[in-house]
Each structure stands twice: as C-alpha cells, then as structure tokens.
Length: 124
Image: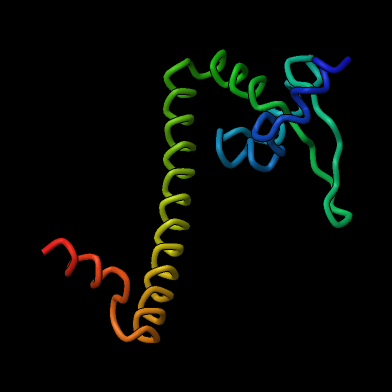
C-alpha cells in the first residue's frame, strides 16, 4: 500500500486539474473522459472549501504523449523547468540584493572593510 500512496505523497508528483489545464492545455472534458476511461486516477481535495481534482503528473504526461506525441511532453517539461529556474533566479537575486544591503550597512558601521582591509595590508 505504501508504494501506491507514495506517488500521491511525493512533492511534484501530483497536480491539480486546473494546473493540468494550464500547463498541458487540457480541457476539463478531456480530464473527465480520461478519468472515466481509467487513464487517470484522481483524488478529490479542497482548499478553503473550494474543491479540485488532484491528478498524478506522470499519468497526465502519458495521456498527453498518447494524444499529442512525445515532442509535446518534452517541450512542456522544458517550459516547466524554465519557469522553475526563472523563479529560483529571481529569488536568489532578491536574496543577493538583501545581503549586499546588509553588507553595506555593516561596512558603514565598522568604518570600512574592517578585517578584509587588514588582511590585504598583511599580504603586502
């Protein structure tokens, strides 16, 4: 039973029906037909009282591959990865900016570079 449930628990292994429509261009009718045909498993979830279907990403990709070809899945995976990388870069840039600001404040408080300027003088 753990193997069957592990896919539902693993981060990124599931997606909502709304995300499947957005990322893979599926319609709600296509999702419902695939569920009725036994091609997609689902679980009914809700967030703040709003119900949605949770689907297994691997099964959605298999469905898309059969309908539209493996090239469509490959392109979609690349788009998803690009989005994740872009978000991560944005987060890291914000973190770098905050660290640079903190560094400037610390340098101003210490009257310069402090220990770094002393190290440079020792090397000479």
